[in-house]
Length: 263
Ligand code: KIV
Image (cartoon, rainbow, N blue to C red; front, top):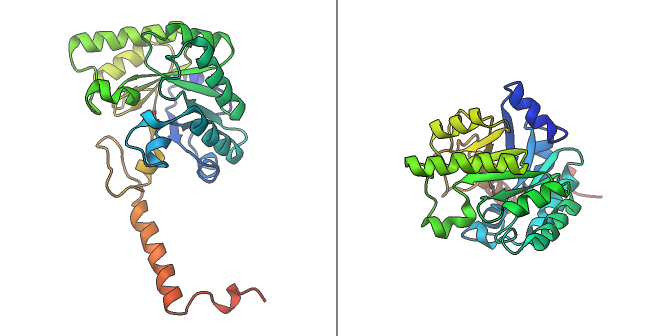
């Protein structure tokens, strides 16, 4: 996909949208060469790359540096950047400044978690020409408020609230909506009710597309396996084995070989 308009077309044509996270130029090049549609520089970078316990630790500077790296890896792809923790809660001017920083680093759009209390920020960004992807359900920046990474929208009242929030973000001008960890029936209902595409993670098969964190898909973390993520590779094992083969070759004087030595 070359522009955000392609996402709307994909929903109209019932073509499932595939979004993956990437945080550096090398992975961005690999994703760009794949059949996936767009990249999310998620604030999950704080956990996956920087080893923090939550996305609360992502900062505008951290996000901008990773967006710039990803953009260097893929000049053409749609790249969405997460607005980091509290950046949409410090007033419209501050949010616009951070969004501007991310756009100038190479983002095509920004992603904003939640809507209540920052409706004005979303419409200001959209009105300023910055495409906004919304994110509802389990919004990880609110992990402490939720008391953990808990499934959202289970009760009738909560489901109603999420449907209303989805309506609001669409009316505020969001071009797409990430639905994280909500019941599959609710995600399908929101997808039918709204014109904008929905991209699910732990939200069942009824959304307009799916997003996964790249390290979950590649199985890079031996300890971490969310139930909703499918591992397509045992990356941690394969990488560990490669490192061990190299180590044994060095110790067994099999590396470097004659052809690997510069004359
Ligand atoms: O930060 C992130 O990677 C995300 C996805 C889980 C949607 O927001």
